[in-house]
Image 1 (cartoon, helix red, strand yellow):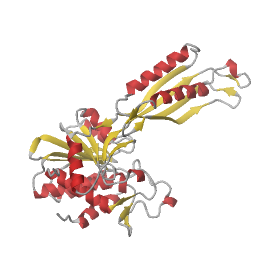
Image 2 (cartoon, helix red, strand yellow; image 1 turned 135 degrees about the vertical axis):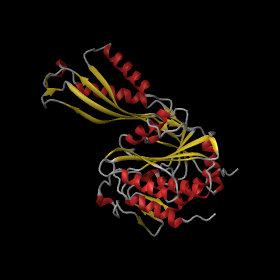
Image 3 (cartoon, helix red, strand yellow; image 1 turned 90 degrees about the vertical axis):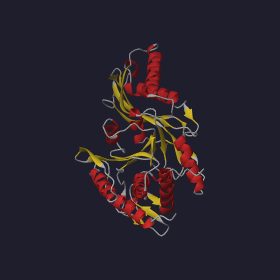
Image 4 (cartoon, one colour; image 1 turned 120 degrees about the vertical axis):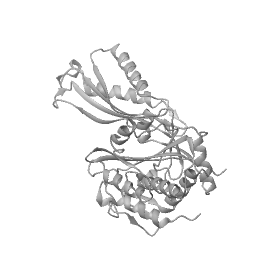
Length: 384
């Protein structure tokens, strides 16, 4: 079947030309655009307004099989442009080059995935009834705090779904696992003193870094077949009084990325054990831990129905998809808290290597193929 790629390309371009940089632009403008687009196909939808710059877009489409209800999700915001000198084109304007690539901020992450879902849903619903019940949720603020997904997950708009598919960039591969994220703030209290007599004080910076190093070593012992090892690193540090004084306070922020099976509780227990061991030799160091952000890890089996369906369809379109893991977090983590029994699969046309980079782009060939695959999926053509 030949699809009308001109219309699909215009949808992608229109979405990219709506500026939705997180923290700067009104992301609700993308939601309003999607509502107008769905109305053209006679599909009812709603805007979930959160504040002046944040809104979600939600549409429910009944299918033939009510026992299967799939949530299709994508985020509307982008990260900032970064250094404009490194861009070959204006990152706020979609530009098509001679090699069939569209350049703009959000081209890979993830307005191409958002366009894939919107186009497939509207064109399948226009000509018939989807194979199963669908909820399409375009969420805001994914690139920062996940405000949109958190509000959506706690609202009347979230139905009881069986599976979740997110259009994040996978380059037409199957994202079956995603690391969780923990931003852990460690506040240390030592003993100040003269810099010439460090043995009389307790250096909060040095001791805090030792604790962080031990925690990093313990966290990174966990691994996953497609994600590799968990990671932990110090991303912020504050402390010190003066060049000639032993610092008695230190604040350390750690970014910890956890593989499936590893939890916040496990990390905090490990930290507690490290501090208990240290107290046996020197109980003077005080430490307070605070969780600043938590995103649970995500994993779906290779044999799961959703994974198998997409794999069969991709193969029927001449693709040989790989199973891959995603190190960054997505809205799947937030939604999964409300739907812990639902499996989450990541699938989209964007290239994950281009996320947040200058000269971000998407290949139209991948974009078109992703739409064809998604339309077959929504129609129930699983390629077997």
